Length: 269
Image 1 (cartoon, one colour):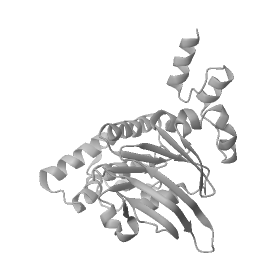
Image 2: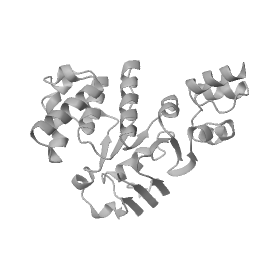
Image 3: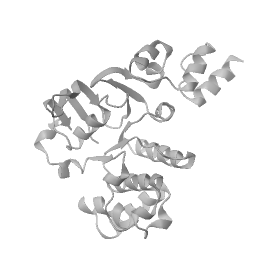
């Protein structure tokens, strides 16, 4: 399993804009962590450092205790898989199956092991029957699921998802949730960048809030989305999930998911 950390991480883009401004964060192996915040808060910039696509202006990024700056992107890709928000930045193969096989093959899988990895990944996202199609024959939502399958087939200890539910219908959203659940059960670290706070509350054990490149809150969904934290969320342009707001109005406590709200309502009767 892989342990991730940052120490005083700063990333400044040309012109001097600090996308990250001294972020110190520790993510233990096997944790499920959601990064939330308004556009421009530094979420995607942060996760790109874990795969080496961006390098620190100052501070350090640690992967299993070693400085990521000393490792190549291809090396880090064996431990950390990143699914981009825009699938069209990730897809390039002529067939769906070829796309899913590419990364796993680069990590050394061959023959039956490669075929099994591709089959499992396609099955997980519901694309088994379209393996021979060109990725661009699929709609955007299914291309996004395809980019997820390509990373799943690599079986990295860390899985990072950037806005995984954007553009997905209910079935697609459920598939992503099932993938996250399976990864957690396998002991993999799962990190997501997301604006879908209902999805975050339902699927992640820890929520980290970023604003202007700094961490403003870090805790369980129950603590971050509790009424006492709403002012912090508001400063970040966010609002707690509807279930949490209903629970607070009814005096039921921190009901961060629909399931928690139903359970609290039943207990109150």
